[in-house]
Image (cartoon, rainbow, N blue to C red; front, top):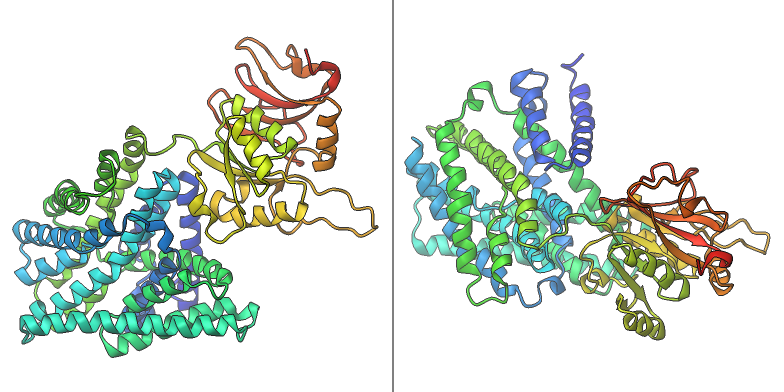
Length: 602
């Protein structure tokens, strides 16, 4: 039964999701469990053989999948993110690439028995960073915005550049093609010209189609996938491997045009990216044989150490000369450069072609690259968080709250949280409310949180959840939907909608929006009336030897528990489905509750 291609292909997709979910749950770079699982189901247990399943389609399928991943990456690149840091970025993807290429090639040639050509090819493949691992690391660590933006842009832009270098090396050195410096330069210009032209042209056509509503809403996700594959196909037909650059440019141009909405394309592309990353890592690691797994360990360790301790710090040092980055940000940049799916896929594709050409030592290329991928992911996956926190560039806990609204109710909740040591940012479109919040010493943002690029203006340092508390239920629902991808659905909350007096059953948070806060009765009007009548949002701290029964929480004046701030700093938000909010309260915790007027002064 396991030999059935349907079982194997379906099993790979299911396993890709399961392993990705596991990696997210245990908070480790998902690439590691994917690689381990691929090794187990392939060379160790022999459950699948991707070459038998896909045959000659393996290499083109991998290339197209990588193109789609880079398309999604391009969709996340917005020019405003890099304001003031463009020089650092371009130096990283030019000077930094050359430094990494040279060091990688020299170390590979010195510590292995590979030919000079294969050593140079290995160095070119390993210049790429990894958007597939950089993204999860940034989500987990959340370093300063300038560092995060540079790392994200670099990891995406550098991939087609690495592919270009690998193509040039493959054709000029490995296959000993007749080539002059002028010919090589012409090839680079052609690669760049074709990739940029095809990607930009198709992006222009796509934006026109979307702007004029020629594509129905329900077909837009498929439309995005189709144009990405079209760009990859046309560019690759014109110039080998330029499809990767074309899809990156396509996504970038679509992300920065203002004439058409692309939300559905972006959301669908994110789903496709997660699926493709999981499937690709399983397939590529499953291709390795038990003989290949016996990689030259000293050589692999030497290459990893050279890339981590020499190449990356030198590349960053040269690229940040004269920049506005402080020394802490430069150190963190120099301490993050994991390799990911593009290095694995490019190595696998070229290894196949080299073996067909009969190049000696070609079979050693893939396991060496995979060893470097595993090593760099381990080093940076384990080390980035502690390094960022040691440098003061990341919060230990993202327990703060973005409070939508800054009126009386919103400020009362925000003040109680802030007094309990929780970071709070108030966001409002009301100038007077914004002024009063600022005068009270609170972090406040004046602007529309539903605007397209609002996350580039908001200071979300230490913020890990949304509390939508405005009097407008529809705005709360829209904002919760808007920020669910940022904070996660589990950390997106809104007030229960007010009861309708029209007889129409309307519950805007049933299908959309966030989790409903507190109890159903405490919507905005009831909270406002409660505060107007002298009620209070009070912070009640339990002593280290005080139980709930012996504390003020047992008083009848305490009407509703809103939040529990644990002694460790963790925040528990009480929702409508929580039937026992005091269940986990312990001595030393702080409880934020609604206390009626009779006890408000006590």
